[in-house]
Length: 123
Length: 123
DNA sequence: CTGTATCCGCGAGGATACTG
DNA sequence: CAGTATCCTCGCGGATACAG
Image (tube, rainbow over all chains, first blue to last red):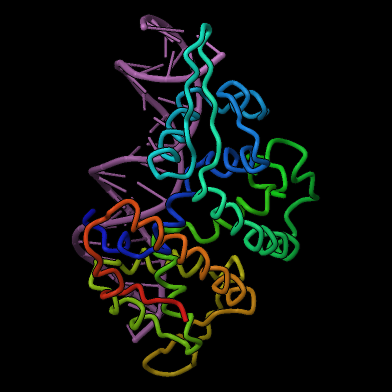
């Protein structure tokens, strides 16, 4: 907490979504239906490892963006979903998404199979 | 460009503002008046080094978010300002800023001298 | 099924010195 | 004034193995 940038709400907000897999997780949860651990782990073709998924989920939970619900069953079941704060956050993604579209057009990134894997458009 | 996340406009947008000093620079430029190199370097109490400032400015320029204008004078003068794209980006910061405020309230980060140094509120 | 526990490589970011 | 050029540190993220 020495870094005075962390006293800026804007910086804090950006940091909260800057983890490598956080946008992916958030986009998965943004449809409102709870998702299980394995569900999140498997629905990306990339090698999102268990350690990474867990660490990102823990940070999002600590930041009050998602909730973690454990069902006392065998085998264990854990579901993740957005909090009210997390839903507000996802709502802000829309204009950012639009900006990113413009950006990519201008930068002429290679032809766009953008959303065909994992990262879905936020409704 | 192997990372398929980079095909997602949202991810791309967040990456574009994720450099350590980019929000600081953008907030400095957001009032519309051009800023000189030294001006940006000095107006933070933290040790933002020349190398860091330069690299962040270069990336923002490459991403079409800011422009760099060199005046052929002695001593040299260089001014940075937001592009149209950069202004659109800064406009999106407002809701993010608001979200960050709520976040900080809930997290009870230490009492708030947030903006007293460097990072100013975006108008 | 849903996680920890280690170990490690790599690259963003930092310190310092030098320059047109 | 407005930058390069080097070198180095540090921790994020990845690979793999193990556990309740």
